[in-house]
Image (cartoon, rainbow, N blue to C red):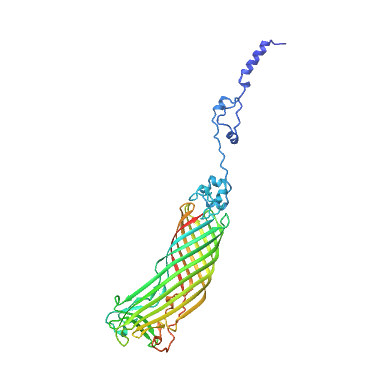
Length: 476
């Protein structure tokens, strides 16, 4: 049987309008973050998206993290993230990292690991050459000198005047360490690096410690009774030579004691330990040091009574020593960064070699009277038995320790402050070569008999110099 066409159309419309056959909107699949990030901000929804799906909250756009290089375990554990999470670090070292492009105090153009080598600290920045100058405010241990000048209270008998151990006698000069005063000096240094990573370098340093003078002068205006003490081998007791004594003799005595020290070193530096905060270099090279000392005693007396009244006697005793050290220098230098502007340096060195010591003793006596002027060899403490040149060579060590604090003023200039101490073993000191035991028969017009005194003592001691350093450094 056939249905009318109008009936079939009506049935179809009823079925389509029922929920069972209604078309359901298919939910839109979530877009991946990578796909979403490529959609333009102004893109409109797809025409196929229903109004319900359009009003639904959209997921937040996920931004991919900045690409960073993998960090070594030691570096990642030592450096806080805020130090190395920079664009400069993420980009890695560039050609500018090996030139003078760093801005001050560890700026970003240096890179987080230092501008000269990834993972390697260098206190000299990107520069391959550096110079420095330091002012030294140092002092040294003095040389032990015997008593050289004494005075006595007025009224002391002539036989006891100026004699050590006698009542009323005191020491004016000597019986102490000479040349131990604070004095100034200067240090100049120059160095450079042989490779861009600053792992091999060289350095030359010269230090000069200014001359220390410890002077003395006495005459009849300073002391009524003035004398030079000694031990008399003929009597076996303390004695003295009078410089001032009322009615007997009038005169003066002056002493000049000097010490001068200088050193030179040339070393190779090799980095054997490094991190992002510091480095340690091994050093090996040559070291030279020079220690020069002198004690000069001058006296002038005028006899006031007796058969030699009116006679003037001028005496000079001169003691000099020269110590020259030559040796192999080795040690290490450790640098450590405290913060972007501050760092410190610790130095430990020891030079092993020999010290050649030379001692020179001279003495002279000039006598002026009515017969004229005559000059003879020998003074009071410098006589024929010890006048001459003496030398010896001994194995020596020259250690050095120092610590220095450095502040970077800008990429090129740094200010430094520190403390240093250095020493030389087996040195000959001038004051310690003075023998105050004498045989007075050598003194003109006597005839020499008895003990050969004074003598050259060949005394050895350790010279130590230490103090504060204030300096400027320039890297370029």
